[in-house]
Amino acid sequence: MVWLTLLCIGTLFSSIENIRAVYQSQDEEKVLATLKQLETKVLLSPDEKCYKAVFLCMKADYLLWPNDKLAAFRKGYAELNELIDAYPTNAEYKYHRYMIEKHTPSWLVEVSHMNSDKAFVKATMNSNHPMYSFMLNTLEK
Image 1 (tube, rainbow, N blue to C red):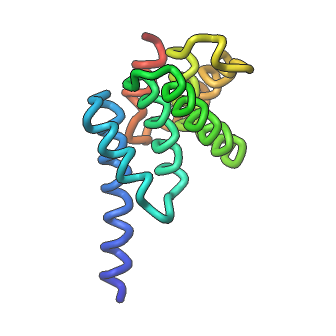
Image 2: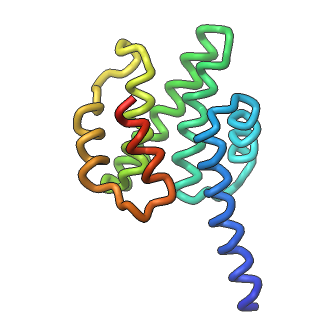
Image 3: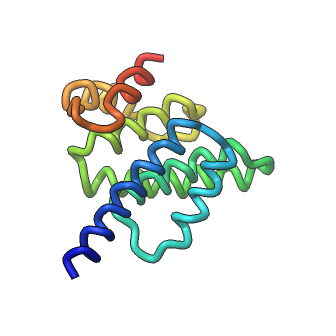
């Protein structure tokens, strides 16, 4: 029984690491395939919920029809904001909101969190976090 629990925990950790790698790759096919997997899961961890929301926003960029783009973005952005409301001290979630707002037309975002999110991430990001270097490097681009 103990080994089964360890196996499940190991799968959870490797899963989020794989998801983070997909995000870092910015590969459209991988993003969409990972989003599809996340959408079929019944229970998602908060980190998986974050990446599902982020990948929905990214999907909006890949779609052709304006209504489809808008629907995907709004759904993902709303889900990410709900997650940040539930976990307001999570720097990784705020990093993603910052990046989404940075790369989104301003008229799509009612309230910009860019300045506060960027400052929060820089001030609180733990150097032991697996995405620490990537996040800090991309904040400045």
